[in-house]
Length: 178
Image 1 (tube, helix red, strand yellow):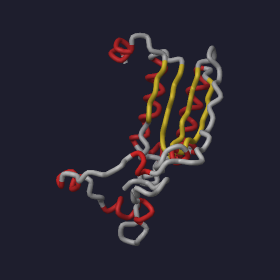
Image 2 (cartoon, rainbow, N blue to C red):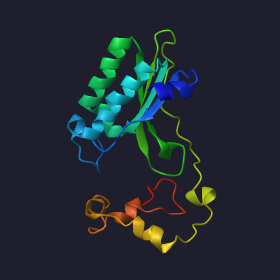
Image 3 (cartoon, one colour):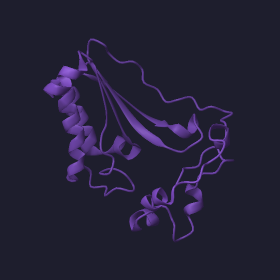
Image 4 (cartoon, rainbow, N blue to C red):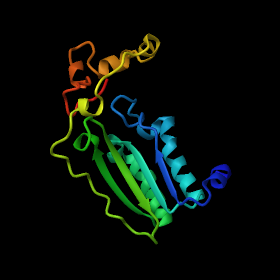
């Protein structure tokens, strides 16, 4: 913490994406029972010791309704008097891909709330091909490193035919890249 304090040079905004696996569909869904879930209370502790005035947190949307996450954040706001705002942001509403995350903005009482809101969806969203005109061939070693394991194959429907819904298409506006 002291090293971060020294390098932060008085910064008052703390941003962290805490471990998603304890809450994710592809993770173990053990919530606070997963040791990786400790990244949230440790992040909040760091924000406290760094005397941050604004704390921005991000994680998968399932974390937004998780009791462990709510308890950690509510404890922080109770101890500090910070105001809590929470919103789910869906990237597919403003960009040609599919990714949703929950965000929390915790602000010092001297700042108050900022009115965090969801995005207004863009009606004429460009297609993937407008942003990525071509996809270059990968080095075969990179392709091998990205091979799905058994849990990922099951989650993405590689063996039961659901996989096309997860593939990147240059014509689409909201597919998930796999």
